[in-house]
Image (tube, rainbow, N blue to C red):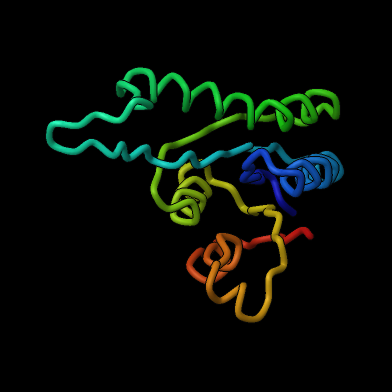
Length: 147
């Protein structure tokens, strides 16, 4: 039924749970998996005549972002390898995670997105928003939500 699954990961405990369940689902479905991470864009706070002490040059920011993305994606790659599920690991730098996820599903021709959700409701859900809800609302690819 599904042949290519996008699995957005962020390094959280909830994401680790989603990795286990998504890999098992992909194995049973005979699908391949695209582990995906949307890293935030770095916006340094530099003012005229003042450079903060923790300022990082753009090249160092790029290296740190790539290192972090590899660290976040590694558990999905290892789980896929152990289960015998074909896996690609991809990341982008983007200000809007949900837009990056929707674009990645289209770019990698995924027919399912498997995402974890904190399940926030009420005012906290409204105020904090949910990347999962935004993907559900704005995307066209089916989404399997895990809690």
